[in-house]
Image (cartoon, rainbow, N blue to C red; front, side):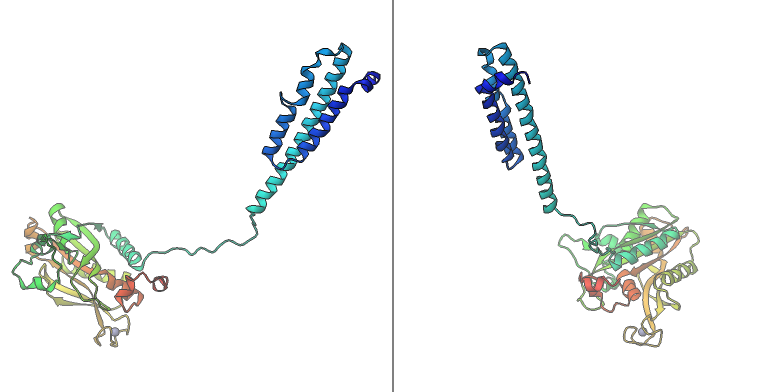
Length: 349
Ligand SMILES: [Zn+2]
C-alpha cells in the first residue's frame, strides 16, 4: 500500500477505525429491528461521526483527503454490512418466535364436526312438498292471523252454526283469530286463482288446547285442494292412498265417512296401526287403525262463497295434521318431544 507511511501518521484514521469498532458493537447489541434501525441511522446518517469527519476534510492535503475518503468509504461499507447481518439475524429470530407462538402442527387430526340435519318436522314437510309437487301441486300461503270470515264463514261454518264450537279457537281482542286450520288458505286460493288448480298449503295453526302427549296449542297442518271440471272421489282416494304409502309406508288403508262442514261427502283416511300392525294397542285404542287424513269433496257452498260455479267445477280437499304424520313416521309417542328442542331426541332423526 502506497499510503502506508502517511497512514501511520494520521490520527484521524485511528478515529475512523474506532468509529467502526464502536458502531459494530452498538449494532450487534441491538435487540429489535427498531432499535437496530435507530442505531444504524445514528451511526451512518448525516449527523453521525463519519459524516462529521468528511464534512471537515477541507484542512487536509489532497493526498490525505484521498486516504481519508477511501478509508471512510471502506468503514461505511463495513458498518452497512454489520447492519445487514444483524438485521437478518433479528428477522430470523422474530420469525422463529412468531412460528413458536402460532405453532401449526399439520399432522394433528382435524376436529370432528357433526353434520347438521333438519328438524324432523321440516324434513318430512319437505319430503311431502316434493311428493305433491311431483303430482303437479303448487304451494299456497295464507296469513296465520285470520279473519273469522276466512277461518269459518267462507268454509260453510256460519257464526250461529254449532260446528264452530268444535274448533277450540283463540279470539284476539280485535276480532281476528290465529287460524285454527290451514283450510282458510283454501278460501283465499279459490278467490284468487281460477280453476283448474292443485295446491298444498303447509303451515302453523293454533287451538285452545290443554297440552298433553297428543295435543299442543300450536301445530302444523298441510292443506290440499284439487279443483277441476271432473274431479271425483276416486281421485281423492288414489292420491291420498299414494300419499300415506309414500310418507308412512302404509300398506293397508280405509276410508270412513265423517262430517266436516266444508266438504260433502266428508271422509277420514285411516291407516293400519304402525305400532301394532293392526292387532290393537294403546295408541290405536285397540282398533288396529289410526286416523291420519280428514278429507272430502269440496262443499258447493264453499265454491259459492268464493264465486266459483259448483255446477261447473268440482274438487277435493284434505287437511293433514302434519305433526301426527311425523310422530307416526318416526314412532314418537309424545308430540311435545318435537317442540322441546331436546337434542338427545332430535339427533336420532
Ligand atoms: Zn295399534
